[in-house]
Length: 293
Image (cartoon, rainbow, N blue to C red):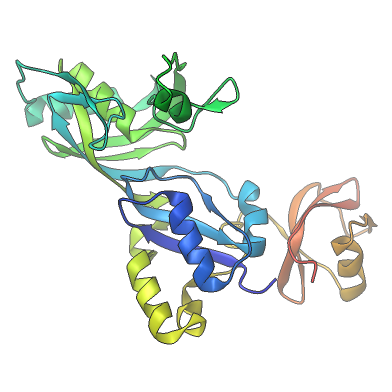
């Protein structure tokens, strides 16, 4: 499928992940798009956008650890736990934690920890998104879930960097750090700097991409489109000849003596990724067809 692949986007603050993906999709003329992980509208940084056929491989890309830089305002808590929310608490006896205290407390978060997501989040409650219920004024009881903090450092007494598992809410982490310090806090900035083995230095800013497109058209931005098999490096490769690839793309099962290793494979024909399959007892079964044209 034409214009299938991934864009490593540096999303600006102030727009949703979906809105950013839509702007990228329009530039590439993509009919469908998606993204790996979600950034809050307030957050900026690395967002991996999938276009056209690349959306079909998203479930097969491991959701690995992420890195964020974030800053807080001590003594204030909002309903969203970020600067866009409504102030619901204030600490009138605020004593800003020292760097020494923060260094100690940061180490206490390393490892597994039970975290309660923010009320304004995308978690599901009885089939509905929490933020929609919160907007409707409903009282929420969101259950905690286990996340993993690999590293947490304070850069200054209001700036931090965290390396964490997927599903970690930085806004909640800021709330919990403040609680251990005996106060409250709200995130004033969040920036994702690493995800899925990609560094922010390899991302392209949305405004730069749009300026390039407006001045040179689609050909000018094609260099920023990653291949459809981006992120699938750990899945073994299986190459099919033309006849077998036609059968595979039409959902056919293939039984071959060469299929000796059971497990998932990424299937190619003429160096083009055509799908994800699974081999079971010498039989290749299609799991996801990527290109059917």
